[in-house]
Image (cartoon, rainbow, N blue to C red; front, top):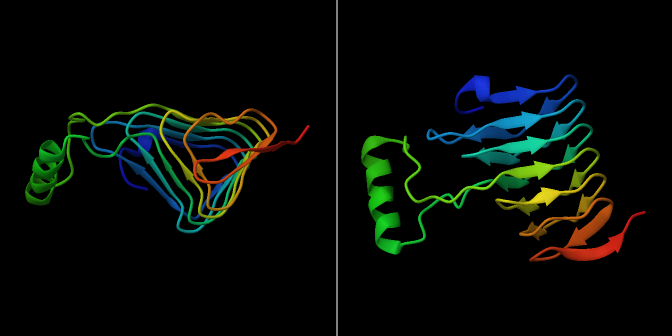
Length: 154
């Protein structure tokens, strides 16, 4: 875990084998009960990542609620030089954030990426190697880059 430990909340019976990272300018990670985060998975938060109960997050998954860098090339380069010289940023700059929500009983498969502003609905499955850029309805299987609905599970 990296960041303010009071802003990382883990429910009873939850097991973390990956990394939970808060950016210095903010962020909060909440994971409900009996959930699992697999090896080499990373959850990055500059605003809020909220994961429900009984959620399975496989190995090598990336979940991030920020753009991580500025979009302007010169500003991005200047911020990088500043970070190398002075350490991680304490202000957000022009980095864009939006919460990520993963509802109860969802399953995020191996090597998937969940981007900022996305809600993964209850009981949904994100297939291996998918990149989720839009909300996933409850009880839906999505796959691909970008992830698209493959089938409804109920």
